[in-house]
Amino acid sequence: MEVKDLKPNEIWTFFDQITKIPRPSKKEEKIVNFLLEFAQKHQLEVKTDKALNVLIKKPATPGKENLKTLILQSHVDMVCEKNNDIRFNFDTDPIQTYVEDDWVKAKGTTLGADDGIGVAATMAILASEEIEHGPLVALFTTDEETGLNGANSLSPDFLQGDILLNLDNEDWGEFCIGCAGGKNTLGTFTYEEVYAPKNYFWFEVSVSDLKGGHSGSDIHKELGNANKILARYLYSLMKEAPISLSAIDGGNLHNAIAREAKAVVGIPLAFKEKTSVLLNILQADLLNELPSEDRAVKLNIQSTDAPATSMDSKTANNLIMALYALPHGVMGWSFDMPGTVETSTNLASVKMQEGHKILVTTSQRSSANSSKENISDMVSATFKLAGAEVRSTDGYPGWKPNPDSPILRVSEKVYEEMTGEKPRVISIHAGLECGLFIEKNPELDAISCGPTITGAHSPDEKIKISTVEKWWDFLVNLLKEIPSK
Image 1 (cartoon, one colour):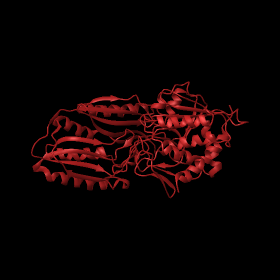
Image 2: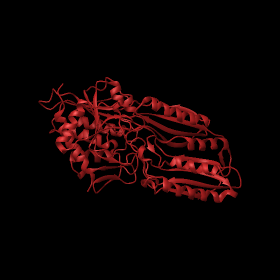
Image 3: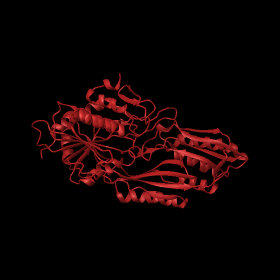
Image 4: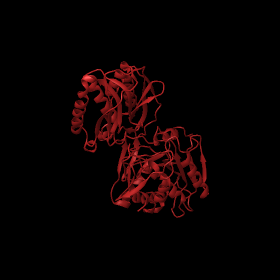
């Protein structure tokens, strides 16, 4: 069965079309044009802003004009991650989807259900001539995955409405009423290029086959971080002998836990055997330390030709020690919502750049602004001790939970009538755009919901088909229950 043939057909037809449109963050022109053409086809009022956010309005169905205006909100960009053995260009290639049991998956890449399914559901509602609803505003934001930039640039007068329904949650049966704020802290190392030392054994060491995942919603799982594992190995070598570092690369995105990392390293010939011994010890240790999802991790050494040049030893050593010392993972748990991560940091990526520079990207999250700034300062201090230049992004605000939210009460009622069960009400550690919208319009009443998506931000991303149908029925029923003005 193909995705477009799944039920409910209203959503899956649009989702199938969306997966065929390349839409990396900061390159959303094609999906934006798709939405503009859709609005014109259905004769709906539409406008865009300088950040290419798209807003489509649909009038209320007869008899529902007095309901509060509901904003349906989703983001159009997707995280672009793939397995190393897959040849794929996210700028041009359609996602290769397939159906397996109760799941829709992609072949070796991220699926883009985050948040393509939210876009598809909104389009299905806008296109329907049968669904009853009050005044609707559909907001499709850009560049969410690299820092909520579309939402951040949104003008307060661009968006008018009373209730915000964010469609970017990833667990059916949950209503999210709060999220963490976040920022990035970046360290830049500048090295001198020197001649590679002679009489060294040169090899490439790689870390691969980690599960990876979302640096917010998956950070509590203590999954392996390839950058941290690589740094641990390199530091163990440094304790044995002088090493030379010619190249290093790890991770990709600030909001993804690094799945792969590698480095080109030289060590005096007399210590050649140590390279394999230490790697085997680390591999055995990781099998005891990592969760079951990551016990397929592979550490590999492959000899290589000696490079012409390498980094100066002082910068290389400082870089390795900084990567080893930088904190990663959960830094604190919430006292207000037990079992919820309050503060975390992610050692996201290590990239060589022009001008003999190495950029190390980290991301911090917290529902408490003071804790977010504290962990960012801790990371900055580590960078500065290692001689790196440091800068931080402005970040984005958290979304303070409101357990007395009117739209939450209505949503709980609709959910209980449908399922006979109470939904879970949560605050998540991942970032959502709701905090930015509420900062611009404090009177907005907001919740977030969605079907079940697992493995977001990794090639293991998949969406559970049966939950999409339940979520769709919930949305259709909720639209009828929106309170009057």
